[in-house]
Each structure stands twice: as C-alpha cells, then as structure tokens.
Amino acid sequence: MRISLKASVALLALAIATPSLAAEKVLGLAAIDLQNSFFVRMKEAGDVAAADYGVKSTWQSAEGSLEKQVSIIENFINQGVSAILIDPIDKNAVIPVIQKATAAGIPVITMGNKVEAGSNYSTLYPDYDNMSMVARALGKSLGGKGEVALLVGSRGNFVSDTREKGFVETLKKEFPDIKVVGIEPTGWDAAKATNAAQTWLTTYPDLKAIGCISDSLCLAADSVASSMGTQLLYGGYDGDAEMKPLIDDGKMVMDVLTGAYRVGYWNIAVAARLANGEKLPQDLFMPTYFVTSDATAAKLKADGLTFEYINTDKEAVEAKNYTEQLGPKVPATAMTLAK
Image 1: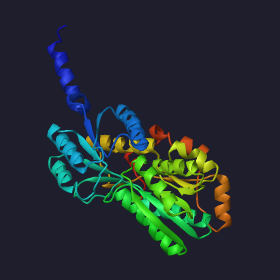
Image 2 (image 1 turned 135 degrees about the horizontal axis):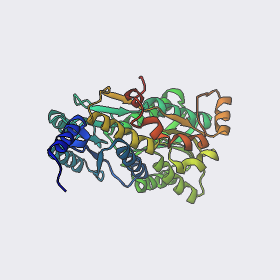
Image 3 (image 1 turned 90 degrees about the horizontal axis):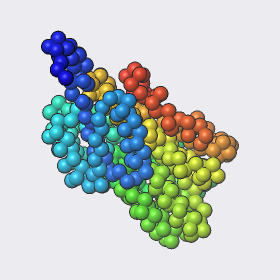
C-alpha cells in the first residue's frame, strides 16, 4: 500500500506534535531485587502505570549487589533511556553514576531515598515519623518494659537507615525500660530474617517483640516464633496484604501502608511525567496510612496513644486505588503531598 505525499506530511506533523508517537519513551528501573514480594508487586503495578501512561518500562534486578546496580544504570545511560529510576542499595555510592545520567540529560528518580546528587528527583515517605509511631505503639503494648529486636534492610540504604533511626531513637527517648537487644541487616532477604529471629529467640528467651522495616521480614520472624511456640508482638512497614491475620488478631500492633502496588505505580507515573517534560518538585512525598485493628487502636487509646488509622478492610481498598489516585488524568500536583 502506497501513502500519498499529503498523508505522509500529515503523519509527520502529528508525530512532531505528539512526541510519544515519534519515539516511544523508555523508563529504565534499577531495583534492589525482584524476588522480595514487595518488589514483585511494585513491578506489577508499575507495568500497569506504564500502560496507562503509554511508556515502556524495563526492570532490572541488582540482586542485592551495588556493583551490579551501578552497571545496570551505566547500561541505561548508554541506551539513552527517557528516565532512570533507582532503588539505591547505597545512597552515597550511586551519586557519581546519577550525576553522569543527569549530565546526559536523563531525569533520574531515586525511589524512597533522599540522595543528594544535584538534579535528581526523590520519591519519599515520612519514614522517621512513621517508624517512630510504630515504636510508640509497640512500647505502649509492652507496658513500657521488655526486650525487643529490629530487622532492617541494609546499611547505607536511606529508607532502612531512616526507619531504623526513628524506631531506635523513639524507644530510647520515650521508653527507657525497653531494651533493643538486636538489630540485624537482612538485605530484605526473608531467609536472613528467619535466621536472625531464630538466633534471637534462642539467645533472648524473654524477647517480647520484633520491629521490621519491611513487612516480609516480620512475616518470616513470625513463622519462626510460631514454630518455636513463642508469642511475639510485631510492628512493621509496607502494608502487605499477608499481614492482615497478624493485625486482626493483635499480634502486629501497627503497620504502615505505603503499599507495594501504590509505590510501584507512583514511581513509574512520576518518571513518565518527567520523561514527557512535566515540571515536578525534586522531592515528592507519598501519603501513607497507619494500619491496625479497631481493638488494638482502642487499647492504645486507653494507654494514652491516639492516632488516625485505617483497619485492614479499608487498607485493602486503599492499597489498589492507584490508578484513580495517580493516573494520567489527574494533575501533576497529585503526585506529591506538601511537606
């Protein structure tokens, strides 16, 4: 089939007027790993966002290796992708390669991390304040006394470090009779969380609670505790659906919903908007929710701790409202809260 000169000119004009028709926008994402359930769900919803925004997303796993993550980013730069998203394993170590990408004119989004690399964008959460509240809820639930432990991600990761700081500093300041007997970096690996929990339960028979900077770590710890016939309390972060039984029966006194699906969709939405030339602030903040059971909230209120929260039924709804909350039909201002 031959196309007339007039039709060809019209198509060319349309392509120029609509950049997405002239060249498909490609987003490159350098993840910590793609095995952890949180990251799997991020990708699932992120792919929905890519379809909604008419872009292509390429997800690469660093498999917990900083060297591999840097190599992935270097490859994205060489490919000339439209935007790069990074979940930094080490927020300082990736600064040079981020600066290289921005110098090449590629927008870079550091996900969940405040990385001071100049022109990069950061998608953030109120991690310190949220984890402080988790510590407060655990402290109140323990009556202000006892031994607790904390499962973290990896040293140098902004999210993990900030959540750890909020948890530890709050317990030290507000609950001096609670002792943190262990803090274990896991690299977000459930197997390492399992090993840590087993060691703690053997070493500290009076252990009363475990805090987790990510829900999958708490789930692993509870599996060990249950198999050993030990009842522990938990405080976590992410809003994973699997935590519902623990929350509803009061074993998990508080969770924080960022929501893996919401996080994945939000980050791809931000990157797509930047790739298409939209103006956004360098620091963007996602709204979060405290999640607990109505019964636990009532007990905490009786102990003097009040806060806004949603229960697990409401959480299930909010966790998957991402297209309505963050889709291409909403204004750019919907991408962030004022902070």
